[in-house]
Length: 133
View: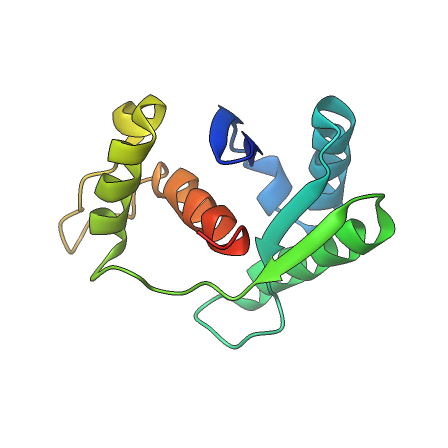
């Protein structure tokens, strides 16, 4: 979750619980809605084929439904790849948003897992894309 006012970044959080099930995602989303009172909510479009697994697609679909039911303007975005890889994109975004520089992930070795901090940059790229940036 990223909280932006315009394109200024104010807060960011990751919820492992929210990614565990559609119900957990909706619970986290409602908490964030109550805390931040957003006017616009941007999420990844669950209906576009991609590399997401069935569990992730179910969570994204639940988020899309919750956005429809809420009193917010919802934007579902198909993620565009604008850089050669996610790590180049993260570096570019960290330059634009210095508060995220400490979270900028390094590219892992081929046997290592993807760093958790990648999610902040994926969310920010998706939000900026949804806002027409």
